[in-house]
Length: 185
Image (cartoon, rainbow, N blue to C red; front, side):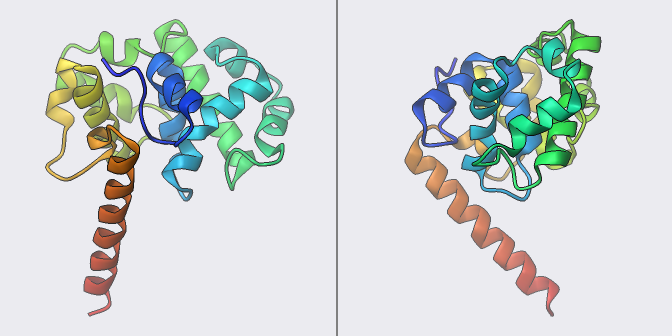
């Protein structure tokens, strides 16, 4: 079991990701069109500004109040309005389907296929996030059902230090550049 996920460079934010399952899911929900560090720092900023990471409290919050937490400088995400809405939708699913306990997404999964289905049903979780979250669950938390989701390329699941995050991001940039070069031919 990981006591911290080294995704942000901030000890408090990294510890929260490992200790609070909803923080991990919120980080993944925010992980688009911003650096990894920004996305995964979001749960701590939200907790500090909104006061809690309780799924029901977020799900039932006044949308304007939640959005204000996202917009406060520095903004939690470059798209604070749409991301506040996405996080609220995510919290509602966790509250409604998992009794407010985010870890039940994986602890109650019967097998890899069930886990894939559960993660895919979360708002904003496409195939890349399913495999990346699966890799984190398998490699950092020992979740057996997640083993089937681990892809054969580097993911955040391989990040176990600040240096590993830098290496992962460099490989990701190189892979994207390679893909762009192939598309231009």
